[in-house]
Image 1 (cartoon, helix red, strand yellow):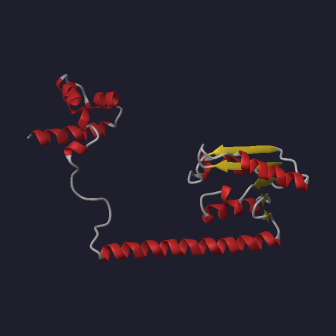
Image 2: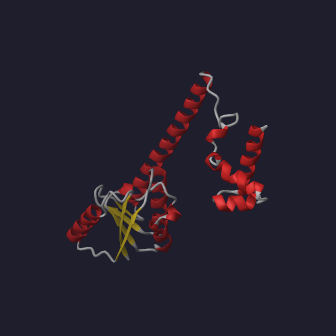
Image 3: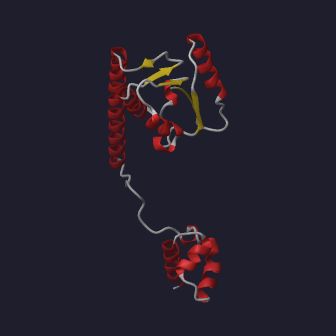
Length: 202
């Protein structure tokens, strides 16, 4: 099977340009797309939440995936490398139109995959190092890291605008679970708010 995969991140972008590029490429190579997979979804979504993730599970030896450019596959180099590695293990070829990559189970693909892998490792190391340096700098500047301590202002709480309604239901003898269902929040949220409300009254 030969699959054409096209993806955009938002509905303001168009899939047509990618499809045109792939069709033009296939026309020159006399390749026929057996099935198109298209989706409008951010690559930051987990792979199993994307149509491409479902396609990955179906791919088998000899299949071909054609994309307009390699960045359509994933959100970053690490994810793209994982996808390419899995395709190589399954002996599935990945063709990218713009870059001209033909990644399959051959020596050229393995050399390119090694280069990608090395780049990914360096990128991961640099990100880790930048994060550590930034945290160390903040500590040196006296910035307290982690979630801020202390209690939020009563007026800033989510249920504050509905306090009179909550008070009314409490006076009717309604349970926290009942109030939570009515307000479409978790019972614990109601419980915490009521305790805070009582503290404010006192």
